[in-house]
Amino acid sequence: MNAQARHEAATDVVELRIPAKAEWVSIARLAVSAVASRLQFSIEEIEDVKLAVAEALVHAIARGGDRVDLLCESVSDGLRIRVRNFGGPVQPEAVNVVTADEGSAASLGIFLIRALVDSVDYDTRSDGGTDLVMFKRLPS
Amino acid sequence: MPTIFATSCATRQKNREHDLDIKVNVREAKGDCSVVDLSGEIDVYTSPKLKDAVSNLIDRGVYNLVINLEKVRYIDSTGLGVLIGGLKRVREHGGSVNLVCTNPQIKKIFDITGLVMIFGIFDSEDAALKALV
Image 1 (tube, each protein chain N blue to C red):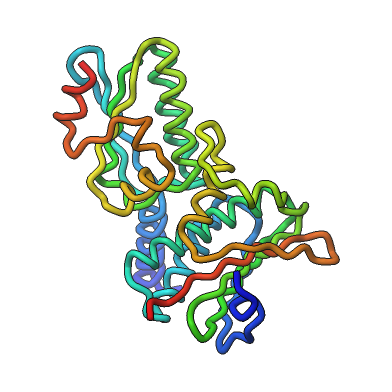
Image 2 (cartoon, chains in turn orange, green; image 1 turned 90 degrees about the horizontal axis):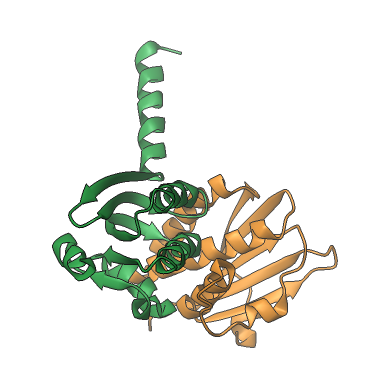
């Protein structure tokens, strides 16, 4: 993720806090779809964002903790999405997976995230949790 | 709460649950094959239902499956994991899993992950069944 996309102040932020339980992921999917639609992404791009966010949420839930926060941040040239877990850290080596592993849904999930958004990064916070930060660029 | 409003809320709630849920229907086909019809969304919450259906079939000795994804609107990595797990199990018995998929967004996910190289993916159930038997 380039420095501008990562650090640029968001003009608008939509925040959703869900319990770290599988049954709430669909609600977050709906929410991020609505935000992406509001920002004029195409239907195909909205589907990409929806799946990437869902995969990030599954990844965050697997880390443990009692909740996951989803922040959708509108920036000048796209949508920055921060998935904040309150469990263990995201494994950097997992984020860097570049090929689909036939035997692992988790690896597939990370692989899909990297394929569906323009950039992926992670920030480890001082409280031990991790922010998985994705950026989807609006078509120029 | 007025009865009509309460009923309306209950109906809406039921519809929403249906929208975000998955329906699984299993039926027998010719040549010791079974077809699994799926509709709805396959995600981390609903995929155990699919896993149970596929596992039950394999436990009963059905090793040739067609999984019809035509009415599936969404699938994530956990759903893909269930399909891969099922394929691995049936292959141990010389069987196979073919998929029916016409939704471009779902097809795209199989393309991105390279799973098009692992599964037989067909535009119709007839074609998927013919390729099995």
